[in-house]
Length: 206
Image (cartoon, rainbow, N blue to C red; front, top):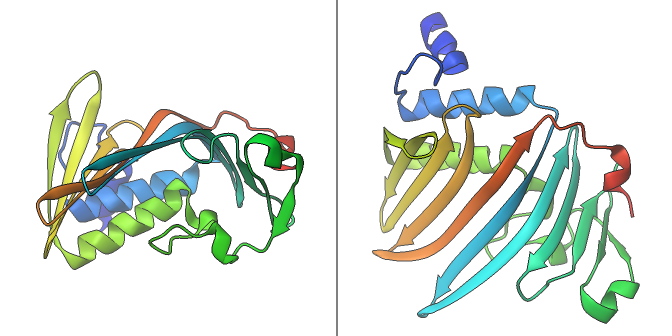
């Protein structure tokens, strides 16, 4: 067990390709160790032959601070912040942005269509989703060489295929593509991912 733990901690450093469980363990350790991060999130959905793109600036700081700014899509201009008081402050884009509302974290307006919660939208929540998918399906890991070294994690479940790209240095996911019934259903990308940037608490208030 000790050897597995050591490999999970240093995976990516010695050029070894881990299995899915080792990779998930390494990602969990990495997220547990970081203090904050920022990125640009791009979510593409494919419904009935139509493509829908939403883009966000995303900021996270421990223990549980989140700021999401919608930069493209139907809600462009909207901002949602999980504050240190445990409440979510949000405002819509456009003229409605003159009004700010306060909501409880479990408010149904803060849930996606799949039921996922805004308060769990950080990479720690994503890694938890990956762990559950690995437990439910058959997984394989390979390496991808592009402008940077990536792990490609494929998870197969009945009627589902998830292809997740993980930065081998950061040990955090950078892309998740979901294929359902042989068709691309959605893709999420985390671009310009920067960890431990020293985000100020004032960023998470409104």
